[in-house]
Image 1 (cartoon, rainbow over the protein chains, first blue to last red):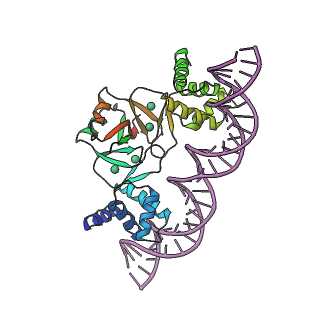
Image 2 (cartoon, rainbow over the protein chains, first blue to last red):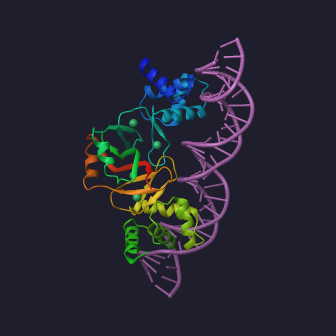
Image 3 (cartoon, rainbow over the protein chains, first blue to last red):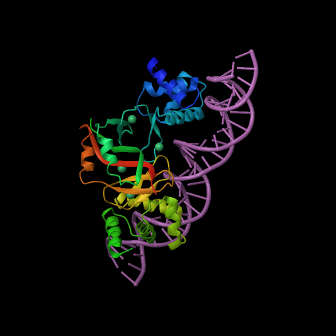
Length: 138
Length: 138
DNA sequence: CCTAGAATTGGAATGATTCCAGATATCAAG
DNA sequence: CTTGATATCTGGAATCATTCCAATTCTAGG
Ligand SMILES: [Mn+2]
Ligand SMILES: [Mn+2]
Ligand SMILES: [Zn+2]
Ligand SMILES: [Zn+2]
């Protein structure tokens, strides 16, 4: 985890009034090092390689904290285990139904704004999720 | 359930090589009579009022069958219990985070096509989901 | 250096969904 | 109208991601 990333973690936690802990650093670095939308269980096993004593409960706690801080997004597809994504740019997700892998799809600049405009006035959006699924060729 | 709806059920089941049963009729009519995106549990209790002996397992089975036939869509928001929607027109969903209620949002004609176009070629979409959440003003 | 409050931990609890095996019903064929 | 092959239904057990809990340890401000 580079200095810049370390600082965004520290800063995001500070803004949210949360403490910096070795477990949070380890879990966050796991997310940044391999951005393949891992499940909690995958994050757990990867984190254990760096910090053998870490518990599953703590991994759940850390991920929840990061989501609360806006450092990480949850990615859900149907009822599958929740995945986590540290990409903060506006993007959609594509799930390959053959491999289960999830890909980031960048959104053109106006897309989110365009989408929000289809909502009648009484709906005050806080978040929009766009997800595709299908097969990825080749 | 009107004659037209009854026929689309019969026809959809026939196309998929499935049998027409009293339980399937009851569950389908429950979905059509109150289109408020009920959870399985809600569908279960509503169906029991019409057919007291029906089991929860059967409600799960019927709903899965309808989804397979294309008669009904599953609606998932985060990890909440799955909801069911018999609206076959292209639409998005808005979840009011204060009440938990889910609303249908009609999509303009070109919207889905526009969205598919943001995908690089190698992604062969089978389905697109758009979901909003936030507060619904009064 | 101290200490109050926050975070971590292992294990138990939860709850939506899925699985199972025996009983029952549908419907195509005769 | 019968019959039989299958599909469906049912109650209860099993699954498993996630949440909860109470005891222990740690962080960070004073
Ligand atoms: Mn949210
Ligand atoms: Mn699908
Ligand atoms: Zn992503
Ligand atoms: Zn709907």
